[in-house]
Length: 305
Image (cartoon, rainbow, N blue to C red):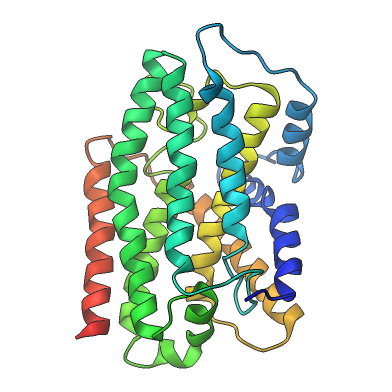
């Protein structure tokens, strides 16, 4: 089923996704007592990269420059199925939440493959960490979505979140929803390479996860990777906001406004987390992600019991 209102939601996502990292950086600058970068700095960086040339090593294969293209395309397709607050996505069908999870995995697979294609030991190390941590984060996300599906009795994201409203939060399902939301928040931080799992601003290759995999990319390829990261943040953030801010007014502008406000607040919360917490040691990250899976399992048990 195709929802015309999804076109507006899709356009807003494509235009405003780079604002989420900007809000995070401005929040961190506020905590540090600095003025911070301009609000439109992510757009300037993307524009600058698009006008630069790409450099390719003679040792790489087509896998290297295919990675950014497939990764960005997967996130663009994922946007078609993800609702924003009370709005309907452009496309929906039963089981589409599994497709969104697989699209996230597809983008990761090609990003990791491109990193391994360089033959760099540093990028191989980052790829290994990315695969290991994602194997722990994906169950938490899938179990959280399964909890929402079991609670709503629906299998498409549009129908799942249409059934979740303030009345459900106030009912006996409230604790299960909060546990699922907590697990999704952990996944949001992990999948977007944020503290306490990863530090997007670090320059030490030995401790990097996501950033070290894209060290050899440049120009339009790096722009595609950065834009795909913004879209990924928007997708995962929309899922979380749809649970925590169940505004279902029936007015398109009101629902869109609530969704965008929720994503802005989520970005601020992420900036606060990164300002008051230190990055976890790498050996502690698996425990952090396993805890998210446990939260999702408990939420699912509370729903199906």
